[in-house]
Each structure stands twice: as C-alpha cells, then as structure tokens.
Length: 235
Image 1 (cartoon, helix red, strand yellow):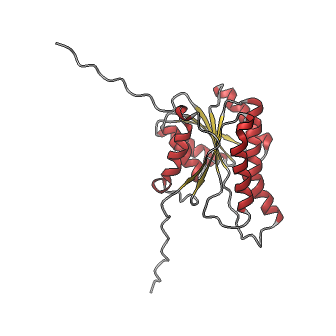
Image 2 (cartoon, rainbow, N blue to C red):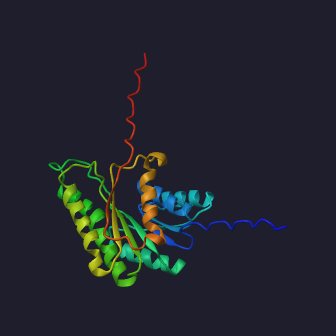
Image 3 (tube, helix red, strand yellow):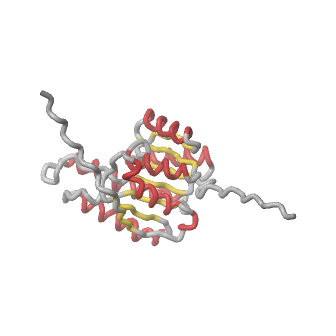
C-alpha cells in the first residue's frame, strides 16, 4: 500500500525579492505595492508623507506582507540616492523599482505657469532619468518600471513628457538597463477592483521569468470609472 504524497506549497512568485515603489501612499503606487506584497515581495514604500506611508505599511503587514516606509522626494535626485542607500542598508539588495511618473496638470495648457510646468517635468521626467542614471552607476542589474502620464490626459503639455519617457525606455538598452513603461488609460479611482489590471501588469513585469522584457511601452486599458451622480435636492 502506497501512501499519498502531500504536494509542497508553491512559494510566492516574488519571494525573496526587494522592490521599491514610489508614490506608494496613494493611487496606483498604493495598488502596485499591495499587489507586489501579496506576491511575496518585500516592498519599500517611498513617498512624501510619513503618516500615510506608515498606514499603508501597516495594512500590508496586517494582510501578511512585508513593507518598509521611507520618506523621500524622488523629484530630488539626492533624496532618491539617500533612499536607495537606506534600502541597501536594510535589505542588502534591490531587485526592482516601480516609479510613478504620472503627476497631472491642474490646469489646461494655455493657463499652465512656468512653475507648474517645471513641477510636472521634475516629477515625471527628471525623476525618471535620475533614478535610471543612479541605477546604472550603482545597481545596473536592477530593473525599472515607469508608470507614465495617463492616456486620458489630453493637454499639450503631456506630450513632451510622454515622448521623453518613451525615448528613455526604448533607448535604455544602450546602457544595459532594463526599463519598461506602463501607460494607464486613466487616473486611479482608488477602487482596487477597477484599477486591478494595472497592478497585475506591474506584477507581471516584476516576475523573474520576465527578466528578458525591456524597452516595452504598454498601454493598459482600464474599466471606465463610474460617474458620481449629483446629490438629490432636499425639499
């Protein structure tokens, strides 16, 4: 009589991987961080607000994941360098980075001030170039996934930003960097069910088996966000 063999549990897909997510305290950053943690990654949450970062880290840990919050403004290269150094002190490695380069303009192109334009450029383009450059210098084996300006943003100011990010991604192979770009069809709704396809796509690119993918610009269609009905007038 032979005894039945019990199947060994399958380890999480990203077990042992350390992945940093910028803008991790809100929107797509929060969604992606949760998706990566569920897949077994140790997630480093990077953002500007210590309280919201700590809150997201607590939620991930309560769900059985591992997360470490680090406050940093990645639009400032020295801030990112400091955060990266801190990550290596804690974990000794950094497999990949998901960087949110999706800051939206608060006005139309005609009314956009020089300061507002420079803020967009710094948050979306300068930060992406700086992170890629620092990786090339210090961690050339670390991959980078950018989440760029949403496809529903039509202002003229968004096109030079997308163009710069696309050029960075498609030409990064010349520096032996693995960089990919995700372009969601709209801004985050904060509803995980509606935004899930973006988290799943970012997770797929993070898998070790996908290490050969680089230079890809992937448009991610998402369900249309429901419109809020105006409140009924009270009599």
